[in-house]
Length: 171
Image (tube, rainbow, N blue to C red; front, side, top):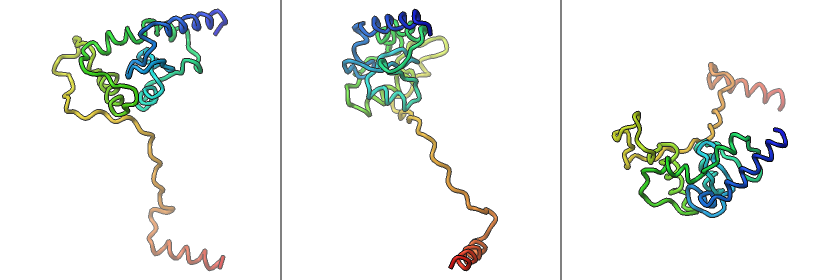
């Protein structure tokens, strides 16, 4: 990135951070968000950024990450623009800072299920999620595979004989 481009990125980021709608977390409204969900172009707090990562959304820190010019330009409008589409049909109470379970549920409904987005040609009222449907679970790292036996075709008796030979040599 050239120095001119870097200066443009810095100027854009400085300007969008000053916008009133971006001074609070998009999800829980905590003051002073330090992260950006670059997939949805919203400003979020530390707690909400961690929960968004659980759902595999791409998060960047405002002070410690490098933004491309395209990413910086996409942030124009930020939280206010995102509210117009992502929360157009939202009429409930947003979670408050610290309510982890409520925040996780809200993120799932808003970003994964897209429950509050406007209906479009491909999305009819019948496509809405049943409110009684449990939320999707965040992705967890894959568990370590279970150890395989040294010789899957060997019997317990063969293994015992093998161990007794080893013990005889070293005993």
